[in-house]
Image 1 (cartoon, rainbow, N blue to C red):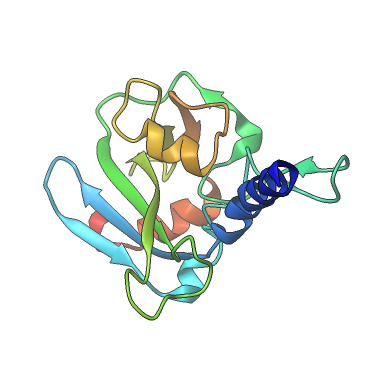
Image 2: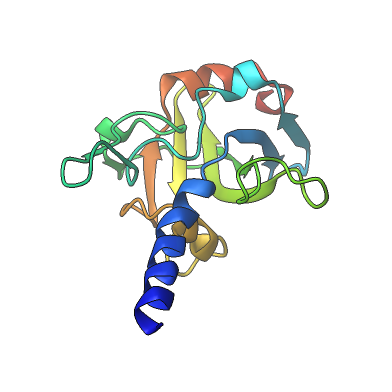
Length: 173
């Protein structure tokens, strides 16, 4: 009986991450200086910005997994940035996904908060920078429960797709 219970527990723990991988349903952008809030809900715009893509994610057969190198809003190949400009306007980006149950439930939330980052945009160059909250930051626990990317507490370059979308938003002006 103990072996059966242990097997059930292990199987359920393995399935939780699979069920948690719903698509990004909404991105809420808050201008931390001015307090303005914008939302992206258009599926065609959200498609390239899936929380479950990029560094810290894996695909492939067990024992042959490869780590994600693209996706989310970060240019993962550029690595950690130490020399971003000072004085850029800062935004908080909140990424919502379908609930952990996989499909939308009949009752309860249609989405849940999965990941939070800070974003700075340089209007002079069009370049953007993403901060993944570190251990002492408010959203660290939430983020690493979702995905531990192993670069938390650092700034990274935003990918071109995100920079283009952000530049088109009213929040960027």
